Amino acid sequence: MTRVNHQHSKGPHEMPATGGDRPRTDHGHSHHAPPRSVEDHLRAVTELLGRSPWFGREPVRLPLEQAAGRVLAEDVEAGLDLPPFTNSQMDGYAVRSADTAVPSGLQNQHEQVDATAGNPGAADSTESLTSLRVGPTVPAGHAPDPIEAGQAVPVMTGATLPPGADCVVPVEDARPSGFHAQGATVSVPAGQAPGRFVRPAGDDVVRGTRVLRAGDRLTPLALGTCAALGLGDVLVRPPLRVGILTTGDEVVQPGTPRGPAQIFDSNATILRGVLADAGAEVVAVHHVPDDDDVLRALLAPEAAEAPHPDLWISSGGISEGAFEVVRRVLSGPDVAEFSEFLHVAMQPGGPQGLARVDGVPFVCFPGNPISTWVSWEMFLRPALTAVTGAPSTRTEVRVRSGDEFECLPGRARVVRAHWDGEVLTKVGGYGSHLLAAAVGVNALVILPPGRGTVPSGQDVVVRLLT
Image 1: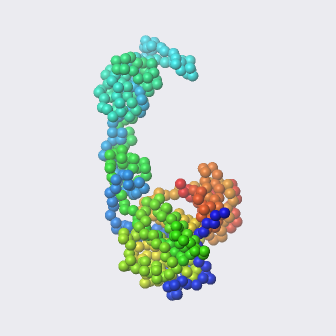
Image 2 (image 1 turned 180 degrees about the vertical axis):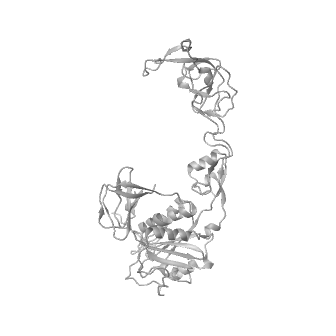
Image 3 (image 1 turned 60 degrees about the horizontal axis):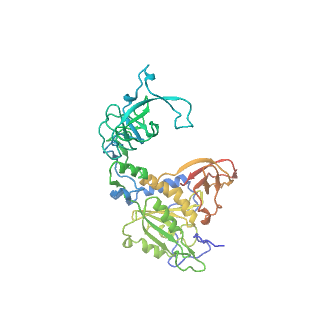
């Protein structure tokens, strides 16, 4: 069996590492303060991000092919009607509905044809047909001449409707069925209604209409609308620039030699992936050993990254152990303008930290891979949505569970699950180290604090991840 190693926080029995022998001086919340609620911590993260240097950066203009997932910085108004001209919804014959009208009392003067001819599955009935002469064919992309009285003009799907025509008869409804040469005679069902199978100009969008607002996320359909309006580029908000820090002497980079007591860093890869999905730009990734001096040097003003991050995300080093390098360094006023390290009433992801260094927010997550990922989903992702407009909001629904869930007194429990549209099942166990077991997760069950179990068959709150 292949063993999967995972990043973890260090226990209290371990001694400080090199450079970490100064006393811990936490500012903000005490170790013994009551845990913060999930809702309150989300508000705190959102408020911290609201002071990011990102707000001082100018919008950028991007070609459509580079703008997927970005957020508009200005409204988009239609410079033309959509569709820009009246066109056919079907392959068929454009006609004047008046030419197919059956005057009252004169129905018997029209040719009566057995509707079952050539259609063995049809009912035994008759229909009234109107004979018309075939006009010149109109392919899509070509401007037609006006229709003449008594004409049936072959038109293809999307082709401009000839001026004067007001309906389209599907080609399969013609008698004989199919397209015929100009000058031939074709019969169509009498009594065609104006507007049948016609797409009027401006049916979707009228010129001058605002179709997208500043702050809207550019989904594929939004980008398609911009393209249909003839736009080659759009003005978008700048991407959030993010720096990633992972920590720990026990952690080494994938692809490098691993010592007998070391594990590979999965958290940087997880954070890169979720940030890419969120439309952020990762501008720095660093691994910091359990050495305060290394982190201090990295955060010194003269070592500032170029381009400068608008946000730092750290993973690990914030709990109650003796080697919590992020907590020790950021707790000192000589490094951070503000910091707080606390517990949130949530499992996994209880230890959390917030700080600001040289005006740049720090959001500090615990080191277990699932704790890092759940913290992203519960706090940073929705905060980014509120502040920057991207990524899109997750949907929460109540669904009936197919599994039993254990609640936690005093803490919300976030459980990995799979929802197939009908049955909700737990994926893996509750442990925050169970990374490989979570690969099939597409939903998070959010259990409120409580005692006992939620039995199978009861409704639970589910956050859908797809």
